[in-house]
Length: 428
Image (cartoon, rainbow, N blue to C red):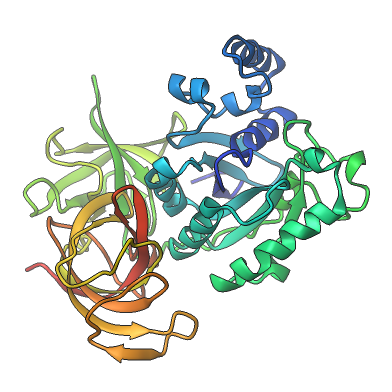
């Protein structure tokens, strides 16, 4: 595909009110991706709703309820072109009620910007949860933006305090603070987002945009079989059924014979790719990282759904009878025992899976086995467990396809665990 610039999916994460949406809005405005007139309209809208100062957040927050509450609920995607990359920016919700949407965002992302407020006196709960989830969901690169520096009079001490506070947290998820750029900014005022700030004379690094441009391009797993988890299915008049999703591995070509697994009957739905579209342009093929809409000959509206995975007819995505996973328990109110059946978020699928065996309890820091066949596991424990999906589910082993191996486990509105598939028993 003749695209001039490499593509990166970048998710903005962090605690509610850290200023994620405002940071994204400021980035798009100061870099000329939104014009003055559109910005003026948003400013008027914000004042009308008694939300003066929220106009930059409104760039990403499209839903009426989001504007009225001043909270990001769903994922917003915006195309953003810099000197080096074509980014798809994903603004993920920080509010704990909407973590499942954040998980979907993080599982699509190649890199993350964690936005933290300089006014925080302690690490906020969603900051911890988002950081851990990004790591477990395979976000390989991280930038930390320390926002609201204006509220701390642009003080270097405030910046250092936040950096010191986050260092042990980063270490606990296997990241090193020395390798992660920390950037002080004041998004509402526009300091250090796109333009260097006079107020931050002590800071010698680049702006947020400079740092985004210095992210490493992705290695594209084009040698693996095609896998495209379906995120949505649209029925478009004159075109037919259009599944939408991100190509995780392999290459998709027009004319290719494909099969969606598991499909409604659990046996797969065969089809042929008629066209591939991205950002309203048509392409003859698509590669890993591309968010595409495709029309497929042979797919009916009721045949496929979110969570199905498209693969080549000759190498369909595997459907699991059972799978063995390595997990970390993050936030369970009591203990996890055999028989527990929470919802697993794997690529775009959300399917209940039952714990059928607790195989081993591990040391979360080193991975060594502490106990064989424990009776239960609890917060902070790492373990190897055997799971059985309640409905047909596509998942792959970490060593075969890491993109389709990682998952988060949710129950009663909280993320209770996260992990990855290490062994797989395929459905006959």
